[in-house]
Length: 544
Image 1: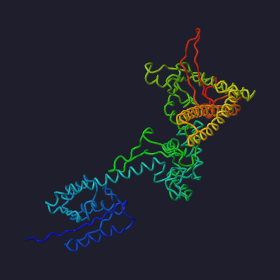
Image 2 (image 1 turned 180 degrees about the vertical axis):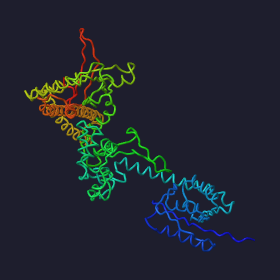
Image 3 (image 1 turned 30 degrees about the horizontal axis):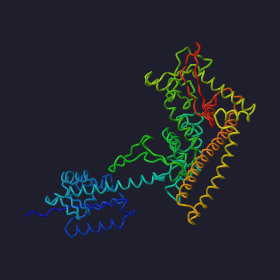
Image 4 (image 1 turned 90 degrees about the vertical axis):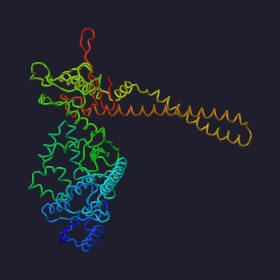
């Protein structure tokens, strides 16, 4: 009879970060004591302890497990013991592969004490795959519960990221709430200002680099307070990427919102994440103080989005100041710019380019028509209209406000006075009806009125009440609309006044004054080709 085999044993201990504290926790200590006692009682030589404390069992990317594999492959280990199968791993496919393939190929005996698994005992191994599957199902169930809990918190508008976005920090009183970090918020505001003024993402990135502004990754480091010394020796501290600039310009967090499900994990089996399109995410508004006003955020997002589609290499010499503003009047698509088929005009560079409906350019006449308009002509039309309105505002601002309100079809002063009288009359009658109801109820209780008359009068009063309340709602809405119209007209007149003496257009100017420009298809009228351009201004829309 031969000598019993000597087993140089690896005692593998693991504890998920969800299960316990850091360091050599009590659960790890319990595993250690159990496995050590088993080895001493059964004559196993302990080669080493391999401890992964704070690591999930759903994958095998664990430092001590990798070290144990290296020792197995170097021939130092020929036996592995764990407290149970779940300590080895909770992914049933990979765990089974180690038990059924890897360990046998390397001459390693595997024992899981509490599950009565021992690869030296073939009969006891029959149930092992099912136990591994149960461990895997446990991970799936836990993962599903965690996902549901996180999704619920996101839908409540709670921020669940590990680190706060650039320009914010986590609220010490509530780590799911963001507060403005005034060290970096001015930089975020400047990035939005540059974008609003027509600078592209690459231009903004280059400005930030040139001005040696630390990039977000450096700003997020815990040692940032000492960044000046760090930056002196490492130029990469200022190496902003276009992706970082684009993320700041498109992330709704800067208008005070929380965006959920942007980069969910692909599967509970992997840490990899996949970015989702904006349509697949959700946004909860008004959850923290905005760094950028929502209106400005929307404007810049539109500019950044449209810029990707309207600028192309063949228009380098054209400053596309209408980017994000110009639309096809018929299909609503944006219009993009291209070189005009004409001799180059060095006196008027704008005239060398035309705008076309994007739907027509991509799908042809089956979808829309060209709606072609020369960029030079568009410049002249818009500039002339702005100066016309500015001069009218300067000449008589009160008269212009009245004209705008009338043009927009809102009620005049006599209608407003009539509505105010009607409101007072209706409110007075409602008060009277309340008194009549009280008296009617009292008469009914005292028997001074028959049940039949009580019901009839009560129904009449209720019907009159409902009609009066509907009338009040309509009148109050009319007054609110009228006041808003007056206020918007006044705001527009104050805004446009300052542009009477302009000679050039800029993207910043256009984005300050105009919501959108709609271009119609040219039409022949009395033998003359006419093309309408509708300009929708801030506050008032299309006024002429």
